[in-house]
Image (cartoon, helix red, strand yellow):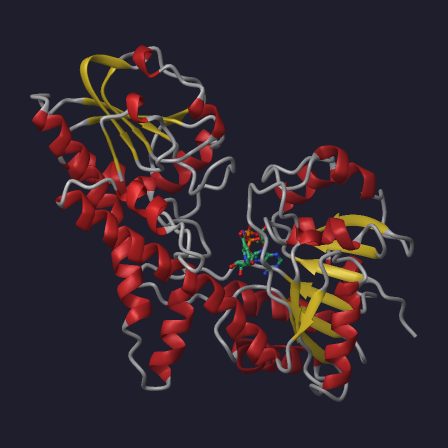
Length: 427
Ligand SMILES: NC(=O)c1ccc[n+]([C@@H]2O[C@H](COP(=O)([O-])OP(=O)(O)OC[C@H]3O[C@@H](n4cnc5c(N)ncnc54)[C@H](O)[C@@H]3O)[C@@H](O)[C@H]2O)c1
């Protein structure tokens, strides 16, 4: 019988923390197609900053072994003798917001090529209900030649980590688990239970677990869309949205959501997975897509609010120098994927303004590569006609805005993280 050796397929924001955690108890092989990522990890450094060098180095082993520890590789040979395959590859959308399952299918082909009798394949990537059994399992069966639920089994355990959050780390977040049969469900649940301190919730089926994840993020998206709409309404009424939210928040069941830009590859993406599947069933989701439209409109809205505030102060718009504070999709995290700060920038460029981007967390090469934008990690020494705080990195709270402002200028706070005295306006 094979030992409980685990392969993690895809060592990104989700896969690496999970691989590290399992490696404290099990022999783990981390597999990724990105060779650069493998060498970086094997040298004991995680560029996503989710796992500290010290914690990573404590579990790394120099070669594949049967003992507890993590070995990272891009070689199929090294994952052949694993019993559990945990898939944590990206599930993005295309430019028309349609789900892209290519990484998931490719990863299933990889696993299928090494799959053996009694192995268990667990998917963690966020998908729509049905994706594991309808899209991934047929690939595993075809490539391996094995029969599902007879020769090999599957599970789904959605990831709930929150990048940049050093408090709610993977072992401290209760995890939903599921399996392709009741026995496998129990087995998958026991596996996660052995490392997740917060415990687990065994869902009755894979589809239920898939649906649970996608609605968690859709619910968040819709709630933020509602407060974004409130921000637009209260702005017209000249009422401070945050004062209203604070007052309403004193009721026990009022939910504490705040307005903002909804970026990243989870909250702004996952609702499209649910929407597409609903449409396949002939149901046209209204609330889910209305939420998406509202949140996607916020970049333009922020830009127009900044411009109006500048005009009120008689600042010439064309040729104005504007400083953007933050280009990552969220605070205290280097992830720039699907950041909505770029929507603010694109809209401001249409007004003929000059944009400078300062972000101490973002990798400038990545920003250039992804968006064709230049960003700097060092605070500029020039002065600006407008400063927009788009991301609430902790460092920005310490900034002396007087050093950044021209004599007449505007400070706009998207995140409500500055003092009233520091800003002219906010979302
Ligand atoms: N980041 C989050 O906050 C978060 C939270 C919960 C769930 N999720 C979900 O988890 C999944 C992974 O997200 P992520 O943020 O870790 O993505 P990521 O882009 O950070 O990492 C994915 C990794 O998979 C690798 N990869 C891609 N195709 C591969 C293949 N065929 N074989 C092996 N490796 C491959 C990539 O090189 C990359 O290193 C997604 O479905 C996402 O929606 C993400």
